[in-house]
Structures are given as structure tokens and as C-alpha cells.
Amino acid sequence: MASGVFLALALVSLLLTLNVYRPLRTPMQLGALSSVLGWSVGEFALHHIGLQLVLTLAFAASGSLGDATGKLGLVVLLTSWAALLLHYWEGRRAGQIIDEAVRGTFGDPGDAPPHARNESPSWRRILLPIPVRDPGVERIRGLPFGDPDHEPLHLDVYRPHGGGGPFPVLLYVHGGGWTMGSRNFQGVTTCTQLARRGWLCVNADYRLSPRATFPDHIVDVKRAIRWIREEGLRLGADPGCLVITGGSAGGHLCSLAALTPNEPEYQPGFEEVDTSVQGCIPFYGVFDFTGEQEHWPHPGLSRTLERVVLKRTRADDPEAFRRASPLHRVHPGAPPFLVIHGTADSLVPVEESRVFHRALAEATGGRAALAEIPGAQHAFELFASLRTESARSAVGRFLDRIQRQHRSDEGCTATGSSEAS
Image 1: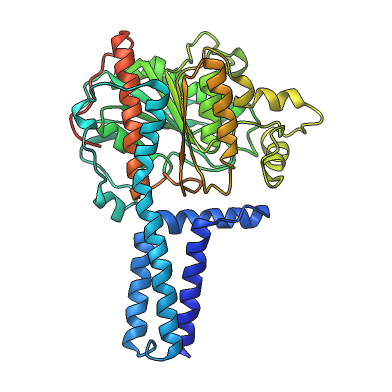
Image 2 (image 1 turned 45 degrees about the vertical axis):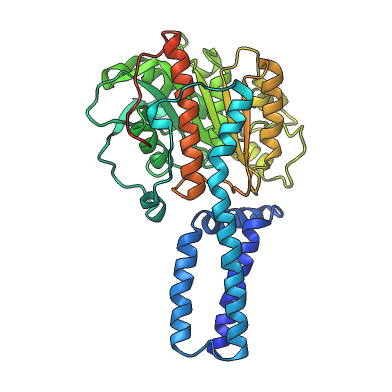
């Protein structure tokens, strides 16, 4: 009986590993479940195997592995572990892939700063992936930056410990399908690591649907940019060097913000504020609301947009969906983009980023890089893993490149941290 239970658990483990390699995309509900399981098992493979190892030792101690059923279960389990470890180890190449994409688009960066050389992953962060306080980073929480519709908005600031500056600024926009998410748990690790690198990071909330109706979300992102321009200097920010990033819905919003600087429609009451940015790094973003590309395998996105976010239909107001789409706001003056997407993403098709990148590259004469991360699921970079550590280091190197460029143009005057991220 116990050996049969062990075999069943081993088969479940094998199915979870298969889902990491071949996630389901349809129907919508199974695609969402497949995404969560693929992300949690794939990025936390060491923890997954460690837990299973404890259970295996317990079964072995009870004598459950001695018969044919138990031995078959052990073979199945070891096979699933081997395949999962291979997938996990491949994640170390994420940074190299991003570096190659950036170098192929923007050229060789020349001499890198000292902290950008010989970067290696932090196994402490990988084994304890829940964000903890970093003594090298000061976090200032809950700063108000707007009160639209009597709904207070707050942001957190991460900066190198001890203040100083001025530091270049990274604005993080969280994801969550425009309906959920929070600065309290999304972007914390990213902001902490990049603050150690010498950046002042701002992690801002925005109004969420269904209470909020687009363009409320992007207006709030612009409000955060206004706060950086008007209030950031007193906390050590260099408002002249501002890069914006985010994942999923945050990837959509950061891209739209980067492509619509000083757009009066998205700056009601503060039209005179400069909301331009010097770079944009969207992760697995949604770039087209019109549905014209037809690469989504299910109608989940269109239903969410029509019923919850824009609260109108494409048929009734196609122009509203077009104007809300970064793909249709691309223009020659766009800032440098680094678009990042996992090839195993079962929530947002990687084709979304491919189409967006082609449009950007065409319009800007090539000032857009695309990095496709093999085997990466949606939300892969939220917590520390081997893939995430590698990818974040490469993103930091891209940010260093932007900082050096603007410093040479007298747009940025900050110096980076001397410590590795």
C-alpha cells in the first residue's frame, strides 16, 4: 500500500516536471494553473527536490521501496529530478542571452564598471528566495504620491544605504492583470538588488480594476514619474536619468509610459510635467489590446479587457483599444528598449514580444533588443532563482550602459555602487 502511494507521488513529480518543459496553454483555466505550477516548480526546483528527498527518505525508512512497485517509483522520481535539474541549470544562461541580445543591438559596451565584472549568483538568496532586509540598502516605505478619486497612492524608495547621490532612477511597475498586485511583494527583490548596484529604485502602486477604468492605471504611473521629477531629488534621485520596468500588466504599462511622454490624455492636471524616460525594460508584457495579431490561444485577455479594464467592447470603440496598445504607439523617438520574455510562458505568448520588438526595431532604426529566455515561465523573475539571478545581473549591466551614456551626455551624474549585485 505504502509503495503504491510512493509510486503515485513519483508520477505526480514526473507530471510536474513535464509541465515545466511543455506547459498547457488552453483552455484558459488550465493555462493559468499550468503557468503557476510551471513557475513554482521550475524556479524553485532545488526546494521542490529537497522536499521530495525528505519524503523519499521517510518512505525508505518504512521499507516501502523494497518491492517492485517501490523500486519503479524510485526510478520515476530520480528521472523527474534529473530532468528538472537540467532545466534549472540551463537557467544560468539567461544573463548571457540578455547580454548577447543587448550587444547585438547596441554594440559592445566597452569597459564595464568594476561591479559588473565576474558577477556570480547569490546562493544565499537562491536558497532563501523570500526577500529579506539588505544592510546595504535603505528602504523608505509608504510615501504618498497621489490621491485620485480619494484613493491614496503610495510608493517605496530603495536606495544605497547612507544616501548620497544623485543616483540614476529605476521605476518598477508591478503586474497582476491590471486587477491585483502590490508593491509590497512584487519588485522587492529586483529593487533591492539594483539599489545595491547604485540605483535609486521606486516601486509604485496604481489603481486597480474593476474599480479603476483604463486609463486610470497609466495616469497613476505618470503620477509616479511626476513624483520622481518633483520630489525625488531630496531623496538622492537624479531625475534626468530615469528608466522604467515592469512585468506582464506592468510590462504593458511601463512600455506605454515610455512611448507616450508628455501625452496630455494621460497627465490630467499635470500636463506640463516632463514624463519622458531614458529607457524601458518590459518583462513578458502585453503589447496589443486590439487582437489583430491573433496569436493568443484563448479569449481570456479580450474578456478581461472588455469586461474589467476598459469596460467597453472592441466593436464599439476600437480606437480606445488601439490607443491603449504599446504596439500601436511605437514611434521613431522611442527610448532604448530591452524586451524580455520566456519561451515557456503559458499566460502571455512569447509572440507578443516578438511582434512588439519588430515594430520597435523598425520604427527606431534598431534601438530595441529582444531576449527570449529558454524555458522561462510567466513571472519567472519575481523571486530569486538561478535564472533570475543571472537575468537580473544582465539587466543591471544594461542599466549601467544607459547610465554611462547619459553621464557622457551630462544627463546622469551619479556613480554606481562598488559592490556586486
